[in-house]
Length: 250
Image (cartoon, rainbow, N blue to C red; front, side):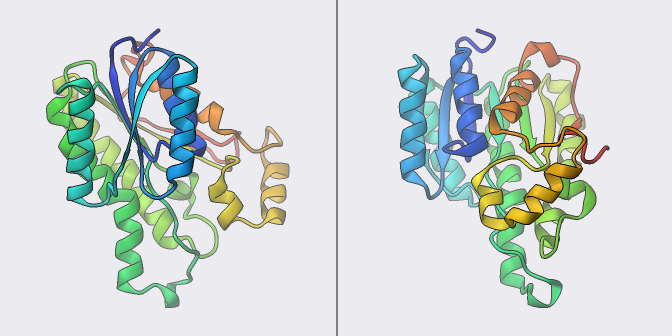
């Protein structure tokens, strides 16, 4: 029970990696605020699974790429569990579409950057005043943030590269307050993201060329999150940690 009586907010916490993170934190005692933007059915299912396992959680719908959405999420968290937040997992984000440079207009650029970077900035800015010493933040970058991503993923990859830099900057700024900030950089993880944006033949090729010869699964990513926000990682901050089966090294 590493997180007994701690409060955790997981943006994008309703499905795939977010679901497993919510479950992992609740299983070890955290009171979890599960945020979702669109997929209400999946978020409700995640809540049911957490509660059936004896965990504590609430669900709140909010677009965390907007200040209004963030304010509503924070208000819901405080109403449910009090004005203290120990763990923040900035997982909300997305690619939207694969587009080559000539098809990237300003609206698309702004949308993708807001989903991935602005959301993490807004959440961090809002939550930090409620975080005591020994709190922890985990951001989500991507292997794309290291290698530029696949075809049509330029802005997604750029936003994820920015998350890596934001993570380092926040680690420096918040470290004196006892708040640790790290990021995970997942590679090919078996999720609806890749079901939507990556062709089956590409997934097979990537898995075949990965040293571990497979895709990752959301539970493995959730285990890494749980480690990073625990006291077991008390001297780790500012790290961007690859979790890709050895496909790419930092």
